[in-house]
Amino acid sequence: MNGGPRRAAGEAWAFRARVEREAARRFERLGAAISAFDPGSPVPALLDRAAGDERRHAALCAELCVAYGQPVDDGVAEEPIAPASLGPRAAVLYEMVAACCLTETESVATLATLLSEEAEPRVREVLHEIARDEVVHSRMGWAHLAREAAAHDVSFLSAWIPSMLSGTVDEGLFTRDEPEPDAEALLRHGVLPRSRKREIFVRTLEEVVLPGLERLGVDAGPARAWLAKRSS
Amino acid sequence: MLFKKLFRLLVLGGAMVGSASGCAGTGQTLAASDKKPEGRDGGADADGGTAKAQDGDGGTADAGGGVTGW
Image (cartoon, each protein chain N blue to C red):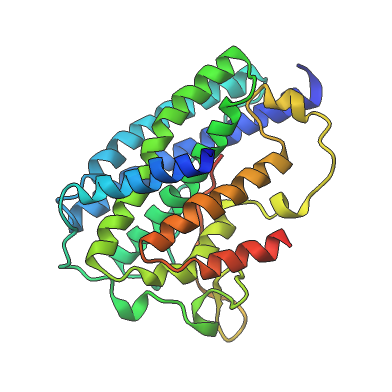
């Protein structure tokens, strides 16, 4: 593979390497915070292990980035994302839901889709290794939300889910619809075409994330309105 | 089929992990007074907008973000 598709694959893996490094930093910070107010929770130990997983994933993504001829950017821009008005415990819950219930759940669906396609052998190995861990990373969010829902009213999250979603996904996913002539080639290198990515994102939201939030006491109405506005 | 499986694996499986070690303590509350965005000062648009609060000058007074993924 040469030219544009090779560069696009390299840039995708470079982006993923950065995302994984930021996740490692975030999980370390959240694990320490949860231990302070919920010492009986199994989640901090999972977050600690997940931080190590994410550093390993970053190295795997960087390896593929270099293999496709792109430079690796070692920068990490991780910082708290919760609204300043939230108390410390609510802020941790906000971040756990945003990072794990939304983003990691969407990542599992993306990885499962990529693994259902033909891929280059090394790409497939990397996808497989990452997918195995991301299942646990998603579960950490649902585990923490379930614990907090059992102890407190978590309905305040409902109004904030649109903010989380806007920060998770590029608006271009819904607005750009130009042809993607290299889509099939890129799929073999672990990159989903935009139309497929949009379909996976929406279905995961509608069939996994939003029902999950509702089950645990978070009204999904504002999130459904956010989605309807973009899908129409 | 994939999505039903993911719901069971991730949501139900995760909730089970969370409840396996008893309940979270309630000693530190979620501070009800400062956790919910309301109307113009709070966050989510009624139509499901981006939930960024605006102050009187139209600047962002309080906003939440998201986490970029794959």
